[in-house]
Length: 168
Image 1: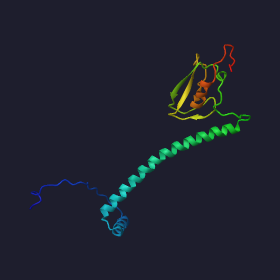
Image 2 (image 1 turned 180 degrees about the horizontal axis):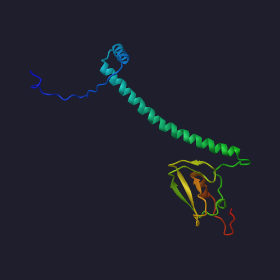
Image 3 (image 1 turned 180 degrees about the vertical axis):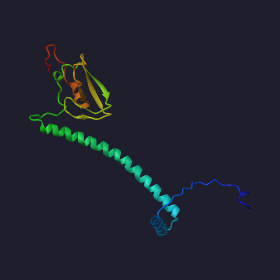
Image 4 (image 1 turned 135 degrees about the horizontal axis):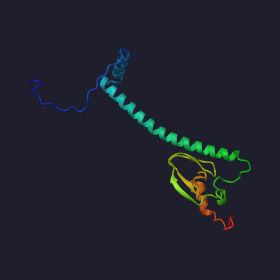
């Protein structure tokens, strides 16, 4: 039966050709012989394994970077605590309102860029929750941001008395 009359069957795989140096050709043929594979099957397996390996490494790198950033923030925060003389309390202990008298409210937000907590000095990374201090004079007042831990202590601190002192 001539080729023109033969019904064409769709192939499952696609053919890709490439030129390789002579020594690589020899290596591929030797390895294929040793594994009892065709050179084509060996190359296909090597390519599939290489892509799986790269995908795995890329996924792991994201986790490693996140873990490293978190560790660096914790080390930085702990180092600041150690260096601060006479500081026996936790970074998130009671946060008196007179620390930031210009702030009348705290607005919770998700940071688009990193910031530093004005209370404990902890780095607040991009994408983490932070609390932005609102004041009447936004032009003159500095930007104040608190980490979630320091802002949560506000709920347990009684509001200031009208004379400005803390009630107990």
